[in-house]
Image (tube, rainbow, N blue to C red):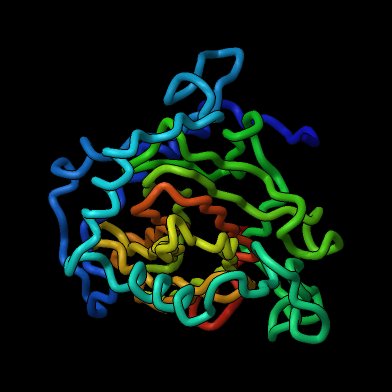
Length: 304
């Protein structure tokens, strides 16, 4: 693993802000306020180990212990009518593709040219000419150690699977090197987990703020014992001041695709961006984020 600049632990104060709301996916333009103290107990900050301490949670997440058969089927049987719509969409996509289908980013036979290209990428690589920027974040600078690599100025968190989920600087599924050293942010796990990264920015109060990120989900196949699984998805959350975050979901696997949301900044001008991955089953989930863009009143915001 290539080395990256280490961020002082003082910057990990970002972690204190990582309290994801209970807001409903697809909520309206004015999300409700939440009593944040009621949610903090569900949240685990992910802090890389360093010379100053063992980090949190203590220990490395690999290898992941295989679940017992009883536990495995308890997770499967928990899927019911209340299963989130993005999980069902991911499952339906996998069923429609059939067993042993080819994929661009994933298992099975590789999709060749020109089928491996889409509007944004050539196979696993986001193309510069199709993603011209400017960008707010290209994930070119990280701190931590392997399986606990966190982008500079971001914090990482988990609601489930904190001890097993991994965070890494990815050098295969990525943007083109000339745009940002050729890395993306990877969040992965093989147990049920809900985890991601977050960062807060300050903008003009009342401004219109649009956030966009590219995501890719590894098409892992998801067939076990003759049954098709694949229920994992990625999501973008955007939170203005102390309002609940609003979530945009990405359940589609095997290629780079965008997630985008526009909101109005509150009186304090605080905007928090969440990049999160959800998996209700112990699947081989690998999710990638890259090329975050932010516009404030139509003008690109680069953090300067």
